[in-house]
Length: 351
Image 1 (cartoon, rainbow, N blue to C red):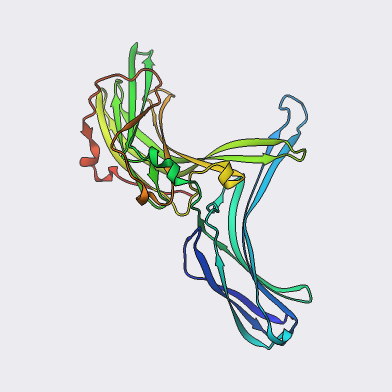
Image 2 (cartoon, helix red, strand yellow):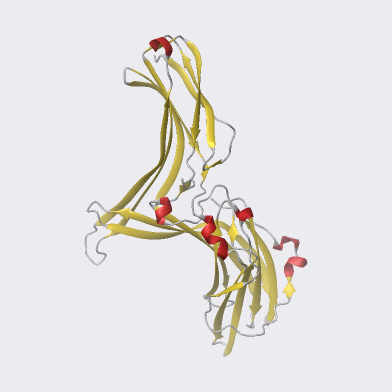
């Protein structure tokens, strides 16, 4: 039977820790009997790791893959407690600990390829034998990413996309124009992204719905066992919303929508800042063209930062074009269904 009856970490009821903040807690040790020459410590650890496989030569009959891996340590601190007289009586012993989180560490993140995790671990040893151990994971919101360099990008954004369609059954031509407008493009984790979507339907069919999603594009940097460096870009969905539009033929509709950002989430950053991963974001609107297998897609680049209240927004409007054909001029986009349909504004978060 172990000398240690129980070991517990007592942490503040903080849902998400912010990089640069502090952690104050207690390690509670409950002993069955006297413990001689104990080593009691608490560690704060933050690390990232990634791994993916790439097939060397797909044209060969046999399968041979190369694994690309990488890892990084973002924080590693330990606090060892002084034990007077070199022994502890039976009963409950409480040890206070304090850690300062670095300001330049990234957010907690998990995907099928890589992860960034943080945890606090309490350990009780005697004569180099671990008697008890407890680990508590932490959710951390990073602040790295240099938001000040993005101040010039805080102007409103308008992205337009056009898709032409031909209906051979009735020998008709048509097009759909999708225009997504944001008043700003810098947001903080936990914010709500409110945006307007104008749909100009120049076909003889109804445009039934538009699917909106926030995509996180992650760039991973890894090495093979032979030291070969390779990068891999992966796209994952953060939040998603489906809006019914029912835009009639040769009419236009305006939809006001909202997506709620989760907490925590990685901020927009580079490989230099996060060592093994880089993050960027796109707000993507997708609509299927009526009676075809084609889709029209509008992509709005946005920036995730931590202190948007410090940004000064310029008055000029910047327009980005993602044309699939020429944008027609003078399109009247007049019907705003968000004014008549309370359900036009909705949001849903997904893991």
